Length: 72
Image (cartoon, rainbow, N blue to C red; front, side, top):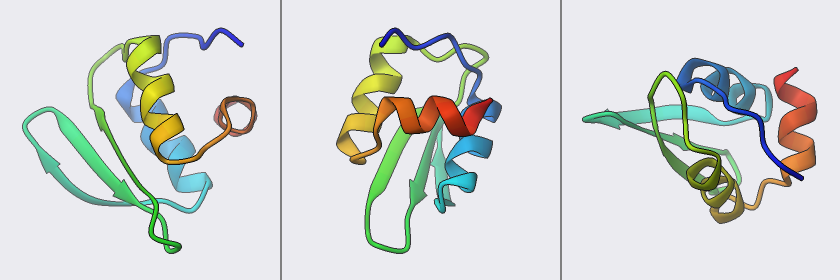
């Protein structure tokens, strides 16, 4: 599935709906953690590159289809 382009704000809100909480920012990157221990780090830009976001979702064991369903 090809991911649409999303902003950093949209990604943060979607991850919060999935149970993640922001634990820090360093430079232009946001770090979020889930209560079960999963961590995701991604750039907080106006547009996040599809490849970068897909890799971050994979690292955090989040299914792309689940993420897209929550973000809409």
